[in-house]
Amino acid sequence: MRERSFVMLKPDAVKRRLIGDVLNRFERRGLKVVATKMMVINKELAEKHYAEHAEKPFFKDLVDYITSGPVLAMVIEGGECISLIRKMVGATNPKEADMGTIRGDYAIETGRNMIHASDSTESAVREISLFFKDSEICNYILPDEEIIYEEP
Ligand code: IDP
Image: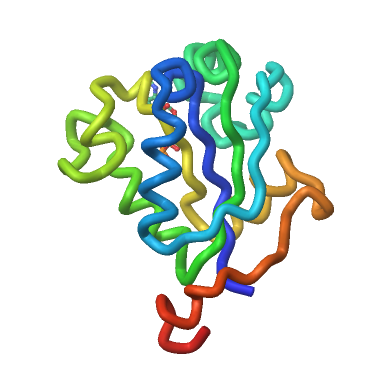
């Protein structure tokens, strides 16, 4: 099995009807979606997910934002996909995000930056287990994996 990342489309992305556009980017890249869940996150889960920011001045706004509407939580699988997806997502502040990245192409403000993606193996494991049971993650093989990877 290749690396897995936890990715979440935040409420602004869902409300702006950008789910398809963003998922299309990951699929075109050759990555594999192995779990998805649309949900409204409660305050408790939001605070756990963003626990590392608990002392930051923007924490309350962040929790309010992420609980303000539906999110699309997902697990994406692919070769070294944690760093790959972070590159595709772009800088935290969309004004500094490169064109061609998701935030650089669609977003303007840090507090409405559309998407979350795990920043390390440890975060990915922690975040996936916060949002998904093992039984909700699908193991399957795509036929083009032998084309996309040198060693399928
Ligand atoms: P990341 O999402 O690019 O990994 P983090 O530094 O982990 O960035 O911050 C988590 C989230 O907290 C950001 O995506 C953004 O929504 C929010 N955030 C970070 N810094 C600020 C800020 O200075 N003002 C408002 N929101 C912020």
